[in-house]
Image (cartoon, rainbow, N blue to C red; front, side):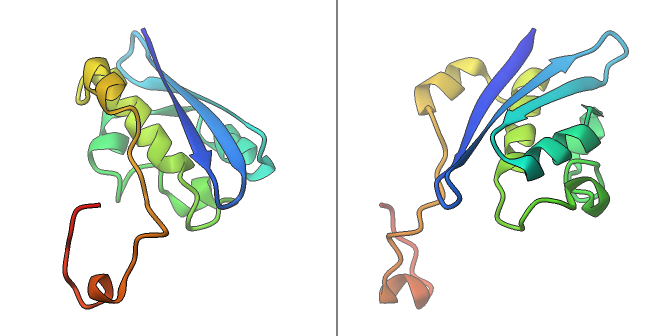
Amino acid sequence: MTSVIFVRMNTCQRYARVAVSRRDDGDMDVRIESDCDNIVEYARRLPAISDMDVLDPGSGRIFDSEVRGPLTPTCLCPMGVIYAASMEMGLMTKRISEAVSSDQIDLTHCTEEDRCGHVRPF
């Protein structure tokens, strides 16, 4: 079965469709479609991943500097790969994904209180 997520990056007005499929050998195929040339190049460099690439992202290929080289540091596409692969691995259920709908990085709710280290819900 294939797990698919959509990444919408409003700061650059780009999108990506990330699909991850488990192969018979245990690794996962990664297919990324995007209207961003940098993400298309990233996709070319990341045709497949292993479970360890997801479970230990600091040493895996998803965030490897040679793989993600064309992307800006704020690009959310690599996290999209993590999310889709986590769904494919059963670490995040599709039911939870459907119920939550999306995660969010909010750029507009930062106040002076937030800068002082206080954490508050939205």
